Length: 99
Image 1 (cartoon, rainbow, N blue to C red):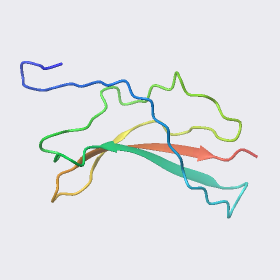
Image 2 (image 1 turned 90 degrees about the vertical axis):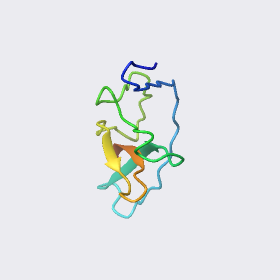
Image 3 (image 1 turned 90 degrees about the horizontal axis):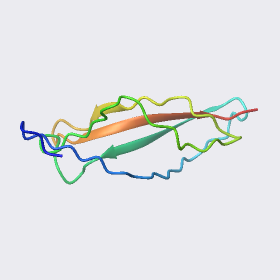
Image 4 (image 1 turned 135 degrees about the vertical axis):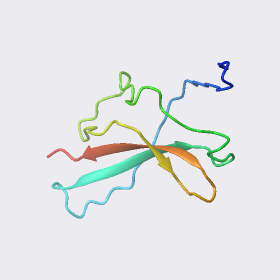
């Protein structure tokens, strides 16, 4: 969608799969922190600004897992580098192990 202010909105439907390396040193009293990062490395932050319009993630299709529980779900805008001006969104996915 192109607005009269020249702002462009592109809302693709995407299904993500991710993995996270696990450190079991303190199992079962540990907390694992995984992050899903989305951004453009082909264009600068001046050309493409990656942002989330709703400030929360839609978890309606999330499949529950008996070993993990999703705690964090608020995405944050992150300035990667002032030199390259890359724009990226970082979503914290906090998954503690259940006992």
